[in-house]
Image (cartoon, rainbow, N blue to C red; front, side):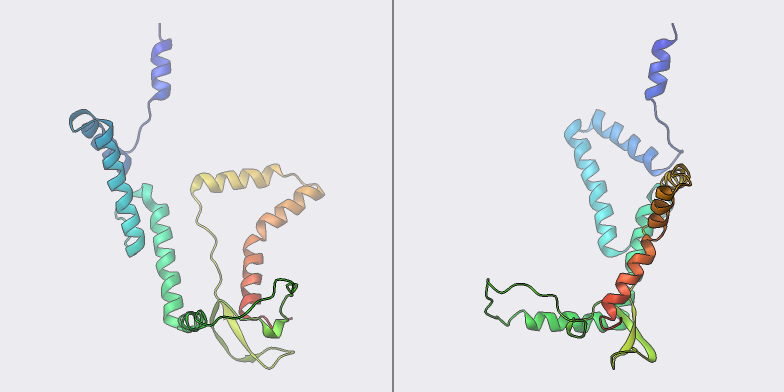
Length: 202
């Protein structure tokens, strides 16, 4: 007798009162039933996604919506990163140089094998600022602080999944190697950023 109700309750989802999911669900229900059905609901979802894209482009976070905290974190991280680059001015100069070099054309030979440029001939990338008067050991060049990429923000569910994966890797050699590789992802990214900013460093 209660089986149909159990199946119905298993499909019912809930959300906090007056939250973004609650408001959007009520709007979708009203639009679907009284304003044009499926096509009107699609227009509403399109308008909602367009608002998210517009706030992303303008760098304007949402207010009082916990469900959109991940989007807010990405918006604030992007604002900080772009302000860091523009405030330093190094990247802007490099972009202007690249635009000037686009007008120059060179003849290339297809039979010439590609060779990796030596460290002293590589173009530095991702420099934040110069580290005082510190210089490299083997080359007469200043040491530059790289622009490091911050780790991507994670939700509570993602953090729980990552912790569970770390726990289930075990204590054997293979599990320890995988655990060390997962934990050193950010370190490897910082090392690559340093090498890109200081190509002459050994």
